[in-house]
Picture (cartoon, rainbow, N blue to C red):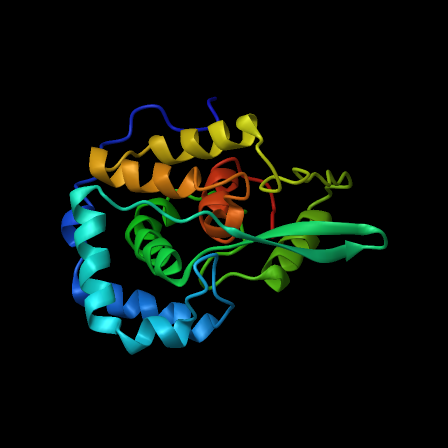
Length: 212
């Protein structure tokens, strides 16, 4: 059985659903998450000071195909003694665009997830994953496979990018919508800024296993 479904109907155009209320809701989500400025040094407060023209310009760019995300600002955070993890910080404008795309694509892919997938999903958490693992134990299962994809978004890893693209294209939206995703995915070698909680989980969620 294939990891991803083969024949899934194409979703309708998503860029037609990009509206000012959606952009405003996306900005408010970005504001709640706080975070530092990106490579352009524009903070959330600075972006908000000209919110209406900024969102109008972003809507235009997203719809006419001229949207190009800025490179990520690289910052290294401690991971373990003697090792650091590269963190990519997108510009505030690009974070708003990412949240817009996430909100448009999430309903399409959420219902395709394996029942045993618990990570980064609404209404699901690690406690539920643990409860499922205990249930498996009660049913007689005694073998546990602990697997992780090392540094999935830490560098230019063509195989991981092909995997994430394949997961997305199993249910492809319109051409302009997929171009938006490609633009975000190829922003830089640290393109996991967007994918960490959404696209990456979509990639792994179809395969199944009790994951959190």
